[in-house]
Image (cartoon, rainbow, N blue to C red):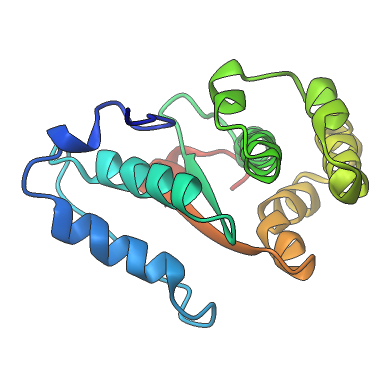
Length: 178
């Protein structure tokens, strides 16, 4: 029985996309210094779904690589708001991954619940991120945005490989203070 985390359809419905998915999975498992890969395509051809399928597969198949998926939304108004949403999504996926509880992603617990669910070895990091997100308005917007979007580097500093997937990056052009 196939588990669907972020994808909208099952992998069996992704007809003719197995090569693209395999290439992205291979990239996720590759050397960390080879960390940038741009995937683009015309609207409505399924690029976002391919990215979500790769996220699912890496999450479920690999306890060594933390996948992190984030899509800039059409309704995002500012870089600050988007950065806070990114930090929450990353924290949610981080805790779900570390606990090996993919169902946590669909449950979408609030940030306080994520802090409580963090394992002992992750508690300090999760607490720091939660504090940063909660008190984001106490910092200059550019400093806060930079700090929140650099969270994958902090995760890497903990010795955890992180495969970050940014989707709908073209939406960033609409963001204020970005």
